[in-house]
Image 1 (cartoon, helix red, strand yellow):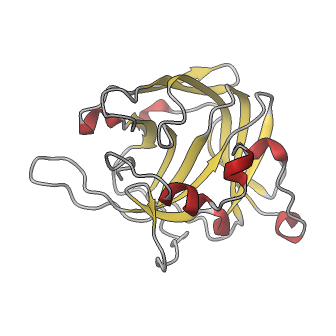
Image 2 (cartoon, rainbow, N blue to C red; image 1 turned 60 degrees about the vertical axis):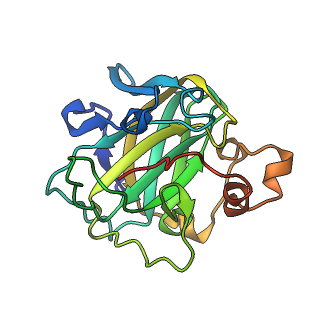
Length: 222
C-alpha cells in the first residue's frame, strides 16, 4: 500500500467497530457475520427472500456513536477483495444518522451506495466519490444534496436480493477498506470484474434497474 493510500479498516480488523444490521429488523430471516481471517475479514451469512416475499438484505455496518471520518483529502474508497462467490454486493457511506424512533429503532437516512462484484479472485475495487449514488431506503434519490465526505459517520457492506435476483449463502473476503489518492481520476479504468449486470441490465442505468421493479420493504436502514 503506497503513500497515497490510507487504511480505514484491516487487514487486522477490530470487530468491535462493526455490528450486524439485517432484515430481521423488518421481520426477515437473513443473517450476516463478520469473521476475522488470516487475510483480513470474511463477510458471510445467509440471504433469505422467502420470509419477506422476494426482498431481503444482510449487512455489517460500523457501530453507532459520535465518531466521524474526514475523507476529504482523498479521491475515494479502495476495497481490497481476497475472495468472492460472484454475488453482487453493495458498499455505502452516510454522513448522517437519524434519531431513533420511540421504539428504539433507527430511522432511515440518506445514504450513498456503490454496487460491485468480482470474478472470485483477488482484486482491488476503487470507488470515487462521484461513483457513490444517493439513495433512501434503497431507492435512488434525484437532486439529492452532495455527500459531505468530511463528515462521514457510517460505513456499510451489504448483500441483498436485488429484487429477488440472488439469495442463499454468501461469502466475501475483504482484506481492507482504505482511502486512495493518486492518478486514478486522470485515467479511470473500470475493469470487467467490477461489473456484474447481465447483458440485459447492462443496457440500463442502475437507477432504471431499481425503478423497473418494486421492493416489498425498505431494504437499507441507516
